[in-house]
Image (cartoon, rainbow, N blue to C red; front, side, top):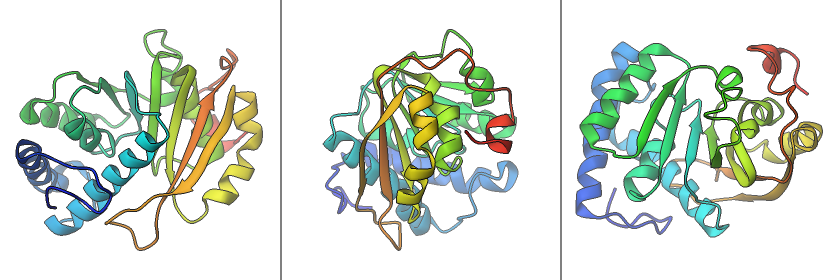
Length: 233
């Protein structure tokens, strides 16, 4: 990854060094924490880093990048950590349900020197009912967490009115948006934008689905853990 990706997001020499360390941590820790199926450094940079920076560019193009932000179901820290590396003023919460992955995130944040980044271990359905997190974020982001009708219930409750949910989706994005229409309306959102963005790491361009929060989420949502997935709205 050079100092300028095709997505036009520039990185400094210092940021390049942080990406290198992050890549090495992912490779070293993957066997113990099941972080990523990728082991090839070039594949990690293209798929994880390249896609994340492409997503960043798409979010910024819509004026939606804002603090505080939360990465819901972040896994190994994707896309949150790459965004934070190149936008050091971003205040970020990484939400991950799995203990071992959360332990990795704590280590990564510490070793990469990422000030202003907090790791929270917990399920979205429970964290979104905590007053410390419910409707406290200007931006929620998620990649490969769940189909959009489910993701809306898991992630939109974290977003304050006026903020946005940025969901990275694949080739089925248009269909998912239609399927999620009821959930979006019910939980206080509206579709702000759906568009593909350029990415070094994808055979087909991913799609950014941007949902703007226009009303508070009703107190009944999200439902208890597991129910959003079993019975999507």
